[in-house]
Length: 133
Image 1: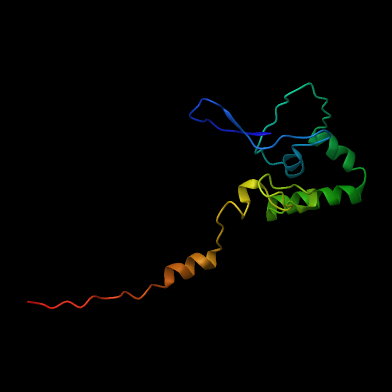
Image 2 (image 1 turned 30 degrees about the vertical axis):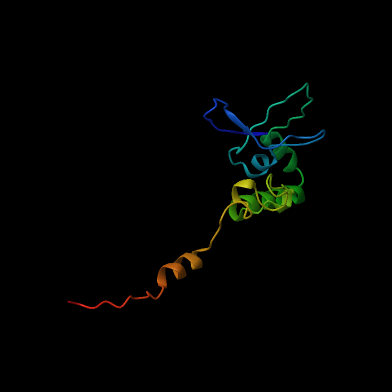
């Protein structure tokens, strides 16, 4: 899997993960309906199984309980940025529940309260004695 990115050396992609046998990709976009963040390219001959989201939804609609579970997972991803239901692991730290773009181990993340408190407090300035002429 790779991110599309233009580097100075002319390479047009940045590899972020090598999938093993029976690996899967695209589940985040599949469940959320959002655009893909990464793309995939095969290094060797591969067998892929594909089902469109619309075909999958038409099958799910025949069973109300399964369809409601799918919508719950979709809302969890889209509204709360919570990826734990589909057990997506971060490519950086391998923890479940967030993606590499939001990884707290490689990105600083401060809440609004931190920023407002930081701007409301100032440090005491140490003054140097100065004698006027």
